[in-house]
Length: 216
Image (cartoon, rainbow, N blue to C red; front, side, top):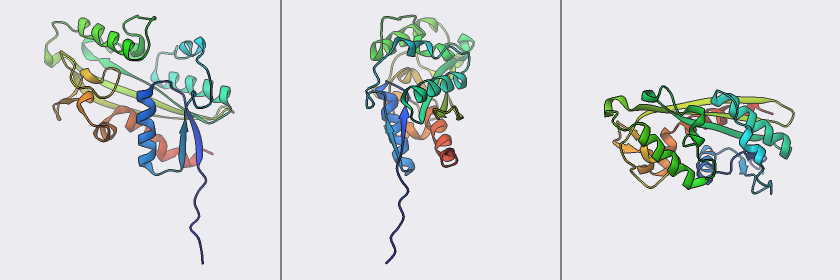
């Protein structure tokens, strides 16, 4: 009687301390059906370090994702997935871009409080801008790195428009302002399944998962 061979589970560190990102990535990995376990810095008892805020110093999402993945891969000794993502608004000539996390300039805030400060600052910057000129897109670069230095990367984008006020209570970051016109909903008004089908992070991560079998 033959038995079905089950591939061994591979464990990857996810280089983020964002609960929203951790939830999204774990859901996407689970949906893929791949034998992958996603761990976090907290799981591995990697304490926050001020140097983490200096990693993303580059001018592109791809370079920042690579830098973050390599930093945590070498620190932990484990293959590491990292992303750098952000919002680009046409009326602001592509801002906030790679500065999305710190757009408000509030270095004293983290988590939801920082998200709220960024939202309020973005609305302030777009005050008086008509709807037809509030086009924007989210971009996400994902990198997978080994401690030895090997890296693969992917990129995902999604287009939308910035609303005039917050809508919805799901998601994180700029999600309450990012409207998908064809749905008439912001990312924060979508359920997890629907957002994970459309989002920039889902597109980038799914592309990475499609290649992960070749990354030994």
